[in-house]
Image 1 (cartoon, rainbow, N blue to C red):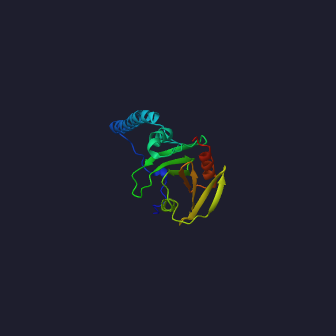
Image 2 (tube, one colour):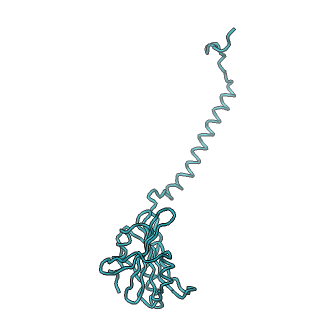
Image 3 (tube, one colour):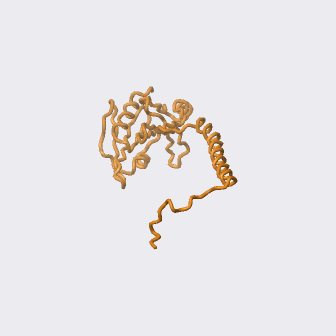
Length: 198
């Protein structure tokens, strides 16, 4: 007799007793109640802490207050750049008591998800300090941006990303801009340097 093809109608149908049916129904009710209780706890938490889909976290950095605070001891007017609205600072700090004797004002500016320009400013710059902060490379040219002449330093890292540093003299201080986000951002920042109040 071939038992591989058994007619489904010939198989016995399971029959639950009344107590078995009641227990099965209680398990289903318990599961539904558990899911509803879980949702009752989770949904208010999610409502109070919505997901940040735009990844638009901006640190609360007050460049103006920081520049004002270090202005007296810096020996120059620390720059507080006026940049387009989509830019924001992600740090501003005074780097004092440096081992090499070159104290400097430093600010980082971010645009979008991957645009960044850093600014360093000091009254005590020397060729060694500039070289160290420009990637230890020789100058690669000069740029005139908004009437200010900048010395350019550039190199490519192992991943092929170009790092560019611009250095200029501005009213008793040396200003350095650095970025690996392309010329457009550097030129916007360099223009803002020339337009910054003295």
